[in-house]
Image (cartoon, rainbow, N blue to C red; front, side, top):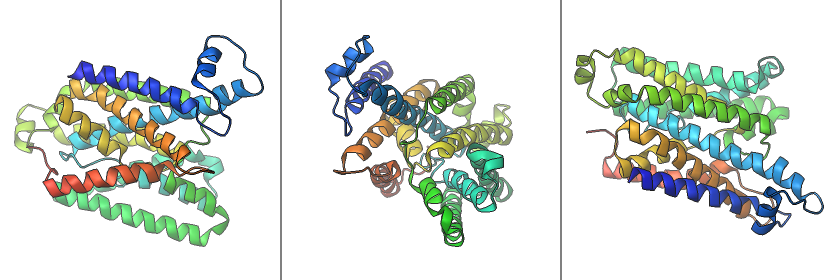
Length: 326
């Protein structure tokens, strides 16, 4: 099943990329795109549109989805909760709130958006995880804490937009998500990030499996559960924050990708990680493609599409009681 799933996701992603390349105000057929890749020169500015506008966006959305899919798998294992992901637990909101604070205080030119987002995500992760370690909270309490933090950060961003109206549009960007400003530099950084995150998690797959056990069983293996959780959560938070710093808050990909993949290949992370990355990339690329074609003029924020798809799954998990492992 896992090899069939990988093959299907790879082929499906390639076909979706070709389809997405052909979409846009400038109509370029798939045949013309294939001719361009084979070395033929097309008329007008079609080459510029393909290589400088559409390809960076397509790769950015796919790589961001891969990073979020991997991060979601880490959150779900580390927090022992299949409904956990960077968006639901407030890490993505923390990253965007960090950017909003930097803009409000005038620190954005000094810190830059990526560093501001990283700081916001790290502080949010430490806050939520610190509460869980200190109070030994249950999984449900931890999830509700993340939801509460999400609401708090959303209120904070609304306040900042009200107090700093000249930055309204820039702050609003982080609450919606968009790949319209993708560049090749971002694609390169995301490619390196996804490779590094996957490599680290691949080497730690046995520890991720141990974290799925109950607390006593995990500790009996000799694993330092708290340190391992914190380290893995920080890796996932940093990777998620990087995506948020470039493209804004994109919800539910980290929930959907690993959960759907787990149903198909099982919970072992040696089999789960790579298909989760592929599934996340495919889902976010499909969402971004839909955001470009649903409106006759302009485009929808990609975060709207992912939420429309992800919220029903989240509600389904709640109704079915699929909020714990076991």
